[in-house]
Amino acid sequence: MESTRQKKVARLVLKELSQIFNVESNNILGPIMISITAVRISPDLAYANIFLSIFPVNDPEKALEKIIKNSSLIRKKLGMAVRNQLRVVPELNFFIDDSAEYAEEIDKLLKK
Image (cartoon, rainbow, N blue to C red):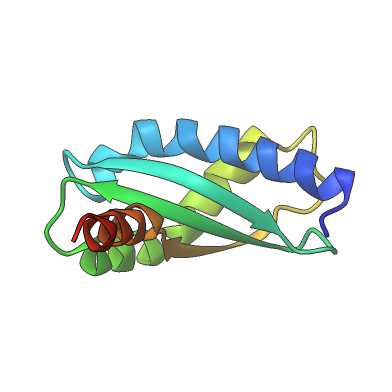
């Protein structure tokens, strides 16, 4: 169960990272849209799991690898954005959010 502080930090990280990806996604991946679907913060606020949806791309795993390679730059920009709100910038762990494909697959199975 997440504490109120975890939820607040997660919302802050989500907001700032979405702005960073809006600006930096062209430099990292080219003309690809990156959407942050969820942010989970550890109880000690040191780690953040970020779940991404990446459109339109044939191989989202390669796009995720590029994002992971640039995670230090992303964390630095996040640190500059939240320097007045957070004492420690969480370590960022990126994952592909496949819940949309999963829901689509379930919908197909239910229609059969």
